[in-house]
Structure formats: C-alpha cells, structure tokens
Figure 1 (cartoon, helix red, strand yellow):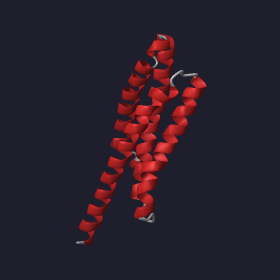
Figure 2 (figure 1 turned 180 degrees about the horizontal axis):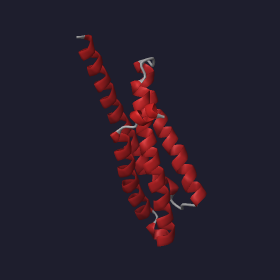
Figure 3 (figure 1 turned 135 degrees about the horizontal axis):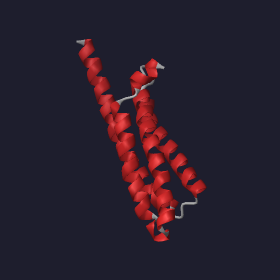
Length: 138
C-alpha cells in the first residue's frame, strides 16, 4: 500500500481537480438548453468522471513511463492512447446511463484536450526519464 501511495503524484491529484471543474462546467453549459436539472445531472456526472479519470489517467501515464522494461516505441502510444480510450469509454457509458441528451458535445472537449494533455505530459515524463538516465550515467 505504501508503494502505491508513494507513486501517487501531485500532478495526478491536481489534474483530477482541474479536469473535474473544467469539464463539469462545460457539461452544465452544453446541456443547459434541456433544463437546469438535466444540465446539473450531466455536470455532476462529468465532474465525477473527469476528476476520477483525470487522476487515474495521469497515474497510468506515470506508471507506463516509469516502466524500465517497456520499449519507448510501445511506451509513447500506450501512455497517450490507453488513458484516452479509458476516459472515452467510461465517460460515454456514464452519460449514457445518466440519459444525458448531448453526450458527444458533452465529452468531446475533454477528449480533444485530453489528447493534447496526454501527449504533452508523456513528452514531459519521457524527457525527465531521459535526463535522469543521462545524469546517472555521468
């Protein structure tokens, strides 16, 4: 348990909170025309999905990029695509179960920005890994 606790980074927690607030607000706006109650439900679902998935997505990327056995040509797509597929599936299904009227409009911004975030964060993680290897080799 302590090993997992040590691997949970500040970036994962901050990403979860920011994603929840940002995309929960977007869901409220995207579904507001269908009434405040429906929009609020969609916002709550999106907040929970984005907060939890933002946290887990960052955690997954940290674990993939920290792996010493995984080759880089597998690591990069795995670190970008795996979290995105997870968020797409969970977000869509959660909104489907909630009967959110505008599911695609609700989750599309989080998927687009999620692709950018996973790409940049993966690049940062791999740069740190490369720099760490170079310094320890010297």
